[in-house]
View 1 (cartoon, rainbow, N blue to C red):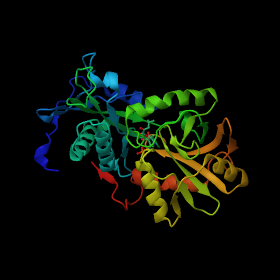
View 2: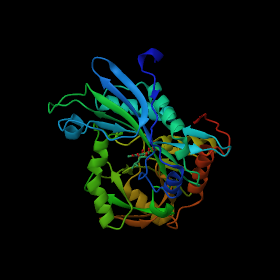
View 3: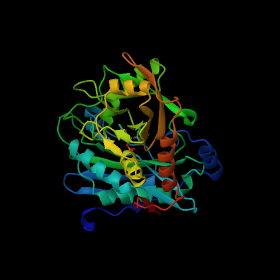
Length: 364
Ligand code: PLP
Ligand code: COI
């Protein structure tokens, strides 16, 4: 991408930064996604001028016409990535280039204007640098960055976006699951599906999450933490959770995860776990796994562990699985060695405690 083809980010800092004592109080126990930093990135797109007006500025509310297309037709995509405090006191981002690429794919799928991948990476670096003091220091905490794009044409006409807004906000976060859950329970949704072939399952668009909400309510009613979705065609193959990919660990030391067939999100954590497992000499299969087989293997002991993974959830063991036709416990219900080993290897790289053999960390 030609450097001239996107605007430079201007920094206009807030005149009313959060005072240090208040910030420290907010950072003491940030939970997930409830606290926001002082600044944000905004870049506008118009049909005539392309991407313009790139800024890091004070975080503020948006003002839109009630006719704005995103409000009616859900033309929205987003990303999620983290900046980590490093063991040497520095700060680094994990694989922002991979998020930039996925964002570009999501934009293409929703016919939103393509954002230069370099601008995406520059924008998350610039916001992290600006709000560096907002990166929490506790174990397992980080600054979660949420880049997103919305269509801003003010029309009820159903048409692809000409005008759009790209923005990045940042939120200091701790554990995604309350109390840093040792293992989560899953509800098997055999009625609601998340994505169908030809749909938007492999794009990170708000609509996917909106459509999954009712299934999450069902999981809540059943006393489960998360939903595990099955494929939309045969209602048989395990796909992913509402916001995480899934891995299975077998008694022969191999691991397996559903293949990227277009209906699941190509997780960056998923990809990283696969590479780390291969580095360790672990056999990795990207193959379909049915919910019935999962139950049978959990009961026979062939399956010893299962875990969910994603930027927000990191790596979290799956303890119990329940559905209208299924009910089983995975291993001892609390996770196991393989999950701990892969999680440890990933976190050690992300927090700069070991060398970064794949060049994943972008140091600020
Ligand atoms: N699957 C879904 C539906 C997600 O929302 C996420 C989270 O981003 C993931 C998987 C994991 O993706 P990543 O590891 O890139 O965060
Ligand atoms: C992420 O892990 O970044 C996500 O987008 C998942 C979301 C459910 C918070």
